[in-house]
Image 1 (cartoon, rainbow, N blue to C red):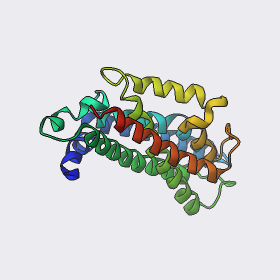
Image 2: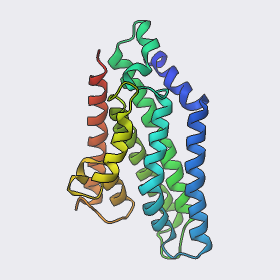
Image 3: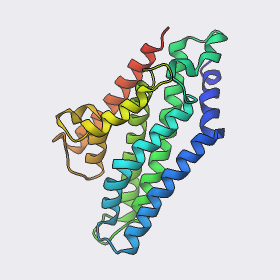
Image 4: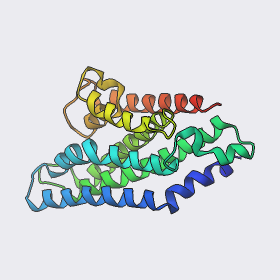
Length: 225
């Protein structure tokens, strides 16, 4: 049953034009900035690009686009209407869609972060292989958390317009006292940026996992009917 529910969102991510355009555009931007940093000889090139471009801009917008593609540009509850019509439970269809989106965003985040760490590597950055692995871990964790965050946003509004509001909220709250409630602050902390939450890297990792789980659970519950 789970495999059957996964086919639709998986097809949207792997065969849909929107998903490929989103992934290609933001990946190209990240690598272009990484190449520029390398060409300029930035001694902390990887750190600069990972924090200032990947964490602050590319990963949130990449996840935003991929979640939109996975739900077909609709609200989360209506994205699986055809499956529900054949007897699937609305909450189950939503949960599987969130899981597919999270895996897709995690994979894309890991690839972009690891690639940027290698391409933009500077003399003062950590060893390339270790830095790439660590960056891949953070990119995957951040991508998965953003997928759940935007999936919850997609439960608001007739066409999931709440997803855009969650994007704005992430930007606004990410540097304020409410930073602990958003993926942005924790992701930037893990990538080596200044901590708006005053939490350690390990605590930010736990916070991202908790945030992802809470958002996914609330999103699925909001789609029960």
